[in-house]
Length: 112
Length: 116
Image: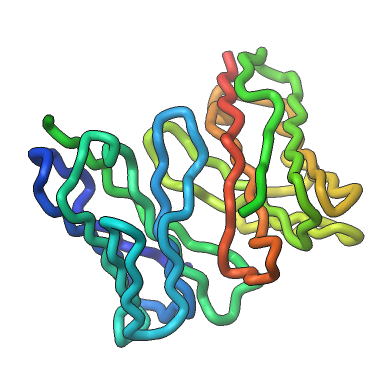
């Protein structure tokens, strides 16, 4: 079945640094979503991407839908301690019944 | 975005028993989804629950183990039947965007289940 490869698995950075994470697949997706999950909480939607090449920002977050439709990245600029959490990418394949495939997650730790 | 609540938020259950998890949304939604998140893992879709029809289960999940109800457009339940320790997970419901953009899914807070 379809799989999303998300990297890196974890990151431990200094406050103020920029962060980049990405997801790749051998399958084409027609939607990419990026979520953040805090401990004990459900995932919260950060950014949704609908078109190949689309670049979308949400505050310090920027995400792009890859031209090949097989990848996406998420950048976080000037990280702060509250950015700590697990970030998941999710893609919707063109022939699914609204089904999302989730990446394995990137655990972000920020050192004050 | 929709406001989604789940009950219970957590539970500790004995092997062989069943637990029903409730998911309530503050607006009418066409599609609701149930996911499982095993400890330290990503999210795996269990089934899609549509009002007025039987749930659609993903490979590896069966109705006898995870019966689902969807009595109306704001509510759904997932039952974890005949539980074993391997069922210890976070169970999450999600809904489509109420404005109709089905590609945006919003999640409830999850139900943390521990089976002894």
